[in-house]
Image (cartoon, rainbow, N blue to C red; front, top):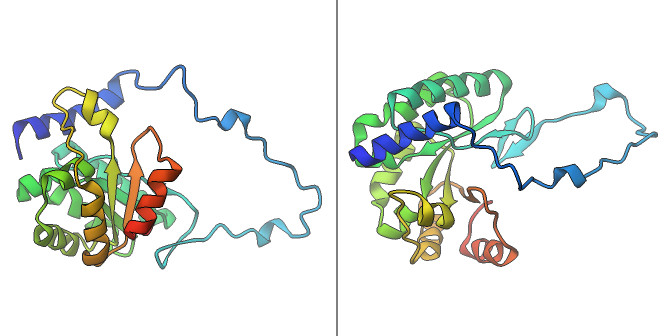
Length: 214
């Protein structure tokens, strides 16, 4: 892995732990959502069932640990801890970007540790759209999926972040084509997400036509 990639992954953890990263002027909008009280539920509390399904796997609650980190000593410990909780609570995990391990296979253990800890848990991998645009070895990707026994692959879209961050990689050409190819050939469900600016209806429609699973 390049020093730049390694430094960035460590910085992501350090910045989130030590600096103020919360948005001050933009909210989720949830403060405008009011849940209506049902005074006649016609069911007992013990009848409430939060069990959900993700691509054929049962999870105890519709909650997923989203892609956070990978590719460093620090991230190995974080992924281990998350996997332990996911196993205990029967939840699902998506690991952080596997780009570091694609560049340096010696870092694969910062991802496989999750499967070691939670052999029956739903675990997904993650890769950035910019890496798809620049080209990715599908055989190597399939090998990583096999090694980690991953249940899905998520692809994160972050054009704004890549365009403005220091040492960003603003490469976005042919991403949809690559997503379509992976959806047909990778052998696991493909999930596409955006890192903070949302997905428009138009983009969602394109992704649906490309064959993504979610």
